[in-house]
Figure 1 (spheres, one colour):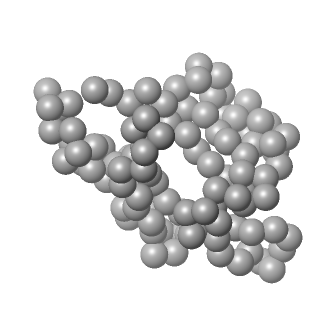
Figure 2: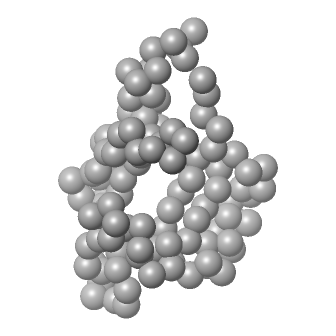
Length: 105
């Protein structure tokens, strides 16, 4: 069992997200940036927060999730959007090993 894809979701316009993906060179499909234009997914997950600058539209707490076949197995949420304590790559790899201990060789 391995990771098929990594999705990065942001509340933004699709054109902005596509431009960022191109700038970052994300063209192989393993890591995909997705636009949650109106914040529907963010609201569904209960992760909507007001804009820190008081700007337009909803913003999102920083989170990371493990999803398998459309089922949310684990959701980790940072205390503040600036934090990167439980959603960084190292933390998610450790979580993955706990969920799928046989995936660690």
